[in-house]
Amino acid sequence: MGKRNVGIAGCGAIAEDHVRALKSIENLHIVALCDIDQETVSRRAKEWNVDHCYTNFPDMLDHEDISIVSILTPPQTHASMTIEAIHHGVNVLLEKPFTMSSTDAEMVLEALKGSTIKLTVDYNALLSATMMKALALVRKLAIGQVLGMEVKLFLTKDDPMASNEKHWCHKLPGGRFGEMLAHPVYLLQSVLGERLDVVKVLAEKRGSYDWMPQDELYVLLTNNRGMGRIYLSANAPRQVFLIDIYGTEKILNIDLLNGTLIILGHRTLSKSDSAIDCLSVAMELFLQTIQNIITYRHERGQDAFRRAYTSLVDSIEGKGEPLVNANMAYNTVKIVEEICRAM
Image 1 (cartoon, rainbow, N blue to C red):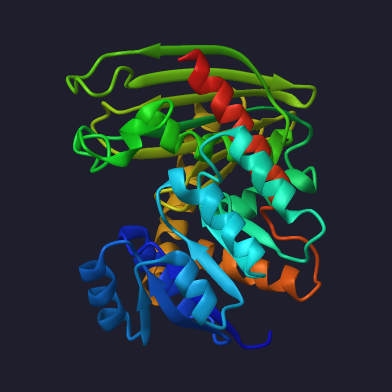
Image 2: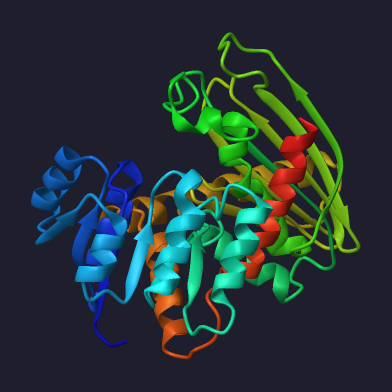
């Protein structure tokens, strides 16, 4: 991997994770930051030891020798900033969601046509070590043929985005759910395929935030590979990110927040089988938890971010497509858009 300069646009909370990941990759060097708020970008430049900072995105692209730009701004800006970067000949890593709408995504795809620019979207749940292990099992048919998949993503009442009436997420189609839906959708796509039909959408209001017209969401999707279900909540007693993948031979239970993956095979309903199964699952959870504690202490949970960047660099250097490419991201946007219209 040759040395490449990186610029970061958007210096909010998520940028901290990107900076830590970038600084752990030997040949990627952050040379410039951009944020519309002068105080924020100046403070971050000092904090992260970055020499140059800007409040105007085209200025950064004009004056810096950048190979990659990380666009970490609110999604309303993604299409225009990505197209600007493409016109400047700069490769792009975007925070999800890819764009606000399928129309915006189509504009980006059009700008990519005929160029050598590479683009990826940081689907960090998909690129986590736990999910990558699960996908490897699915692809080698270790669980048999896939039958279906469920994703549960729950927030608590004090979620910093949901609880803040003035947060930009509430201006998106679907509000807070419109911002978070990309996660379960792209996870379903990774197992069932990029194109999914939305069969049923049920949305309800159970919480007390007036600025959230819906805070419980259930979605049923399908294609010829299986059925997928999504359940989102903003009223849970704890944050939850659980995935179940059902195969004809085995079931995968995945806890993305705890970083655990449990493989469940055949068992009978006998008391002895139940006891053995409970002990086996408990022991596996214990061993994985110890390993995760050790790994997290050394890597600080940056594996998904690093994987996004190294995948992009590999694609720039002609070693295949990024793990998340523009076409997959476009299909994610289309599915999320359809769900939000039905809410």
